[in-house]
Image (tube, rainbow, N blue to C red):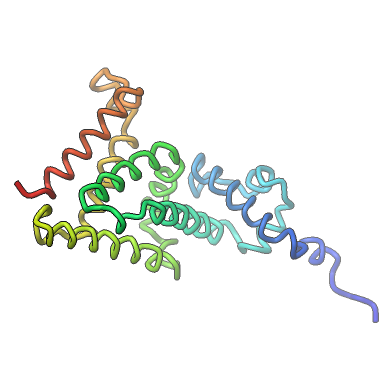
Length: 219
């Protein structure tokens, strides 16, 4: 029997052994494109060029730009949650666990500036894409459970104050990095100081740690 499947469709479908690699390449390229141009300014042609794939392959996997943007957001959240799990916060004493989380959040933000620009873009769209995700909530639950465990161990040992909301604490830790890095250019200009210089970054991490532990640790 002659295979009458359209040649165009067959050409767009990847070979199984290349599928995972192709999707990774597309997501990496899309992450960089969205981070640079935002959702509105991103172009599928440029993403295809960055990933070195046929543009039809992007539509085959992700249907269109909106679904691709959601896949990128899920990917960056998955990456940071996986990295946080390597901190082993439940295996160390509570104060050290908080120090590790603060340092990790700060350094990860510095090393992955695309995360902030992607989140800025999604906030402009009022989290329209994340609201469609079936994965995001499950990604964050383990982190909050881990942080709750750290806080409870600290409370029981008499080191931490009681009644700390793990979600609020995590948001505060993230915000201490997010605002500083995201507004680096304006703040550096206003205060006439290079806020992302080597010395300034060390000072910022020390300040963040003092602020958070100053709130948590009982006197």
